[in-house]
Image (cartoon, rainbow, N blue to C red; front, side, top):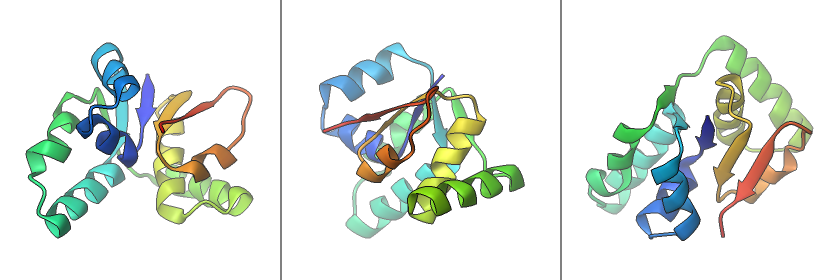
Length: 122
């Protein structure tokens, strides 16, 4: 399963070629925290929820935050100085078995593990 973060959905809404291909060809997992971020931005900026959040309905898995996720996120945040919310998103995706994660957040690339690939969408 492929993991995606909040920025992936902005790339998708902009017609980003790689994001579109991943969305069409892969089973994706997304954190419930990305849903929170997308809805908050949608409300704040007056962007129609269907434009940003509509693709969430197609996501193969909505990843919840658990105590184990929070523990791993604390370790990730401590080791990489990644912001807490992003560390929670990343830890959740890893816990769901995602080993390839698409993002627009450069700080995700601070997480370096042999069996995990972070793909930065430009």
